[in-house]
Each structure stands twice: as C-alpha cells, then as structure tokens.
Image (cartoon, rainbow, N blue to C red; front, side, top):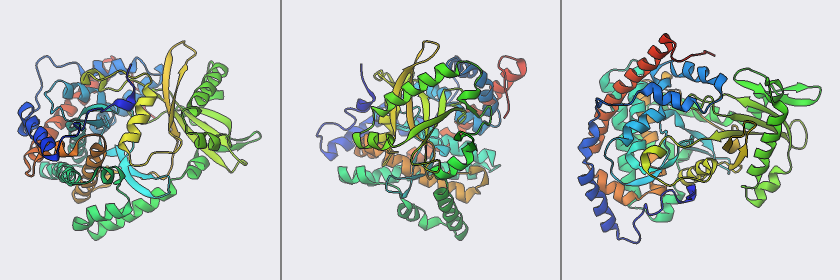
Length: 472
C-alpha cells in the first residue's frame, strides 16, 4: 500500500537534460492543447451535483450537515468553497496534460494567506491541504482561476474586470514557472514569498492605497497569535481556563449530549498517536504541556461536519497556553479521478502534502489514527490552531486590488508546484505567449456559469425538502 510520501515519485524525469525535459512539456501539448483548456461544456449525462454533496455528507456528523448546506447556500462563492468534490469530478472527466505535481486540491483564493514561519517571519502561502494529492498541475490553476471570476461576480464587477483578475493570476503563474525553470534545484526548494518578496511582486503596479492596505493586512496578521485565540476561545472557571462554549460552532466535550467520557478516551488516544509522529525535540516540547480541555469545532464551509476538535493544553500556568486543532482527514475528493495510490493514513497524506507544498510548515504538524465509539476507523491530522494568519477579504477589494491579489496567488501556486513537479516541463508546456492565459480566462467564466447553476440546484433541493439547512 502506498503512502503520501511518494505522491509525485517520477514527477521529474530521471536525469534528463533541461532540453529533454522542456521537450516533454511541449509534447504534452499534443495530449492536451493549450487552447483546449478554454472549452468547458456540460455533457448530457453529467452527474447530479447535489448527489455529490450528499455522498460527502453521509460521512459527516449528522447534526452538522444542515449547517454545511446553510453555509454553502449563503452565496455562489461560498458554494464554490464547499464544492471541491463537484469540480474534481468535472476536471477528472476531461483530458489532462499528464504533467503531475502535488496538488493543493482546493486552490481557491481564500486558501492563500499570510502565515507565520517557525522563525517568526510572515510568508504568503497556501493554507488548506485537506484535498492534497498528486495530479495534473492545471487542475489547481483552473480551480484558482475560476475562484477569481466567481469572486469578481460577487463584487458586482463587469466581465472585463473579472477577466482581468483571472488573466493576472494565470500570467503570474506562467511567468514565475518560467523563472523556476531556470533556477537550481535547491534554490527552488528554498524559495519563499516573505514580506520582501511580496513587495517585489507587487511593486510595479501597487498604488498608494494598495500599499496602505497591504501594510494594514500584514500588521493585523501579526496580531492573530495563539494568545489572541486563547483569550477569545477560553474562559476562567473555578477549575482554571477552559474552552468557552459557543454552540454549535464550539461545543466543549463536557456539553455534548452523549458519550463524552468515551469520546475523551478516544481523543486522548488521538493525541497519544499524534505525538509519536513528531520528531524527538518536538515531542519533548509537547511534554511540557498538560491537557486541560477539549471542544468540538465547526470549521470552514466544505469541511463542516467532519470531526474537528480544539485541544487546550497549558504549560507553566494558566497564561502559558497551547491550542491544537485535531481534524478528521477523509479521502481526497481527487482520489477517484487520479488513479493514484491509496494511502495508509489520510492524515499522513495531508501532512506529507503540506510539507511538500509549503516552504515552512507548523512545527507541531502531525497525524494519527483512531477508532471511534461507533467502531469506525478515522484518520486525523493535528496542527496549531492559529498562528499569525492573515486572511484575505475579497468582498472589500476593488478590481485593482483583486488583480494584485490574483498575481500573488498565481505566483505562489507556481512556487508550490515547482517544489514537487518539473518546472522545466511545465514551463515548456506553457510557453512564452499568452495562449494558456487566454484559454483559462474562457474556462473561468464558463465554470463560474456552471457553479451558479449548481448553486441554484442545491437551493432548489433545499426548497423541495430534499436537504435540510440551518443558519448560524
């Protein structure tokens, strides 16, 4: 059985010359011409998108499924965030380039953000890896490109303004991939988008207003520490600090209706197994903290209903906290469409993919496996709950800011793909012109139309009573 450590084995042809690798990229145009990416239509026998979402819901916490549907129905963009499985099925049905990378798997624009490195610097990187898997590089690019068209529509932008953001994203990806194609292997691995790199990427087109907003976002990210999360998520009790109840978003284990004692044993087993996946010095660090409370947490849009827990640990005293998040890892939505290896632990798949894609990952990132009270086996990955995260707010962006953010995301995705795939072959496929850029602009608009119809199909299912929704 394969593991997530060998996701993209053979992605870089073994010891071929740069010229041979570039030729392989150009040869991929015969399998999948660049202009063909602009064609996206609805086949007569296309699957029922509501059924795809319902199949996912069957594995979720039942009482949280209506919350998931409610969140997806807030807007077409929110629906898109929760519909990675639908898009995976659409992408998997089409011809692809065969140029494989470690995919994020859910590369929409809100999964790119400012993050803290272990050295306490800010970097811009991908943040969500629940769906990570090896696959054709263009799947991530297409998901990211379509997200900008959908976000532009949500802001009321015209088609030219939407297209401008999409083109900025794809052009930045293509140009930066060509840069990586000319770099030494170790230089690619060490490349990161820190604050200096962000200023460099945006300098040419950044207005005074954009510089001010970027500075504000950077400063705000530095305030989003684990101490801020600790103050917001916990309360003082006679027994000490405990997780504050905010049901159904946050429900302490002690307040769950049934099985809290058994669930506590299960979660302690999760933490014990997780600890064994850390390196020795990080296990030593974790042993300096004691477990004091656990709470169930509702997360995201697409992830709502997966089992997710906040774990509160304290070190020296009640003012020395560590907040971890243990999140269930299910099979990637891409798995049915890639023909890839099966994974012995989906949490390990997520962690290995994250470490391969991100330049620097959380020092306490790990995985584990547990058997639940219902007898079902589940995989989990664990990380710190919050640490210097700056989250984009596309609804506040004007067309110029959306284009700038699109450039950042496209360039960052190219860096992520260059680490695991073959940048020379991908650059050879993309070429120096804008044919791929133009094709993906057409695709993004076509898929935004498709997303709107799927959103309306879910809304119709709610009106008919086929699904139940709950608002928070």
